[in-house]
Amino acid sequence: MGALLLPSGHLGGVKSLRSQPVVHSLPRCMPRQRRRSPIVAVAKATGAAPVKPVKPATDVEGKTVKPTLAGDPRDVETDTPVSEKSDSARRTVFDSRDLEGDVRAEQDLIDNGPRSTRRTKLICTIGPASRSKEMLATLAANGMNVARLNMCHGSQESHRETIQNIRQLNKDKGYSVAIMVDTEGSEVHTNELEKPIKAEKGQEYTFTIRDTSGLKDGTAFRVSYDAFVDDVQVDDLIVVDGGMVSLEVISKAGPDVVARVVDPGIILSRANLTFQRDGEIVRARNAMLPVLSSKDWKDIDFALAENVDFIAVSFVKTADVMNNLKSYVASRSDNPVEVIAKIESFDSVPNVQEIVEASDGIMVARGDLGAQIPLEDVPSVQKEVVMRSRQQGKPVIVASHLLQSMIEFPTPTRAEVADIADVVRQRADALMLSGESAIGAYPEKALGVLRQVSTRIEEWVRQEKYGEIVLPQIAKFKDGRVSEELCASAVAMANALDASAIFVYTRRGYMANFLSRCRPDAPIFAFTDTQEVRQHLNMRWGVMPFRLDFEDDPEVNVSRTFSLLKVRELVKPGDLVVVVSDIRPPGQDVVRSAQIRRVPAD
Image (cartoon, rainbow, N blue to C red):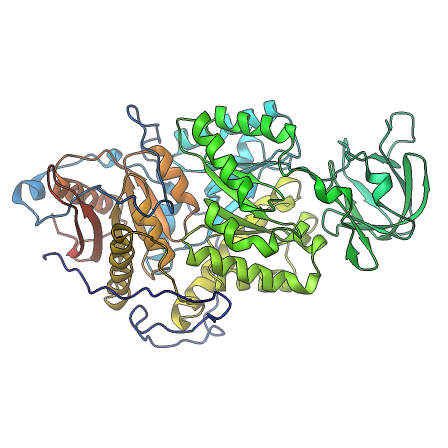
């Protein structure tokens, strides 16, 4: 079929983000479908499916193209043109190993079909419980899209070993697990511990700024912040790791503060500390700490040297920090690295919009956030951040306490399952496990719960058309606006025609990000010729990235993908797909198109 370019006008501006409620239907994008009760559609609890070996993922040699997945609107995809199918292209035979994907994601699509494949991405924090080669392989086989390395714990050498193991796993097994390094931030924290300490109600502990080697083991913690003793007062509350343990200050003596446990729990190594007085967070000299410490800069240099895919920045307060860090990263690395801002501090909440605009992605870190703002405000802040990130086309992660009980127990609470379901209904890009996968007793089962719940709730969301929001135009220039409108129209076509997939050919991931922002019912098959872009697209909702060496003839690229995907049983003859591209033939203007194509039989 020929190219079909729908009219503009799908995306409209908004005067105020708070004035735009979540709406339940958008006529142009969302066709009406028969509603089915979620009660009678019970999700199947399935384990990891067997995977098929494919060619290992390798880096692309030659010129590196930096991706701008949701960046400068003046950037226009000038990737792969789509033209009428030629007989020569139809007769071409291709090797299935030319297409590098992720075997777990492909198996999900084969098992569940294009409309029932999980779109929400899953992130696992790697720690003592999950850093072995065997457990990394198990998590990858069970759907881990991104591995998070928390620089609060472990050494750079141990993290380097984990990075090497993940990359070897990708190469040997055909996975595409991306890597995120999460900085510690200038938080107030305790010292390293050999093992977690179980704090019982009524027990007393000493928090000090001096060396603890002369004190009784397990009863004293060294605090990283020298003004700690000056900031706290008797009767203040010391909150450990966002509420894992709470202690009341009962006395002060020189460099020491003695506190009694009022809410028991587990104190982990290098635990974060916040202070509360009369129900309010104490904002003294601790509020003046810089966002990035000297240790953080060393960890950032380590991340750049290891060529990781994402760097997450803790306790971001303003957009300036993100702008400065992105400039630093651009000057120090030839490879594209995306910078994620963590919303977890009191100061970040009023500056959310500016932080979202300045960052490549956002993480709602609810644990520390809940220790700095009233607990009852956390759900509304989470929803606001998710909505603003989606409107700006930035990937958004929801983290902390999703399955906290599974650190110790093999099954989650029903409230935790409902919490995960709510995040999926908000259509966040990714869910993240923290202690559940880093130190928990059941990391594989915790990941399985995330996978099963998100898959089932996504199915319900598609049936009920729940969680649609008004998307403002984010492009400042006409070229970018045309790309936005083209992707919105392509999604509307795919939804209305019940397409099996949306194909997009991209070198920077720009158009794939626009498509993901619209949250289509069909999966997005994004084909790119760079490994770095493929890894970054692992964070985008609904995107299944593939690495493919592009040919000069754009129609050959389309024919190749049809042939290669048929071999892998990801599409079948007769399937209807929507193909999106920007075209820039040599010496000519850019031509953009959205095509409706049928997968050919040969």
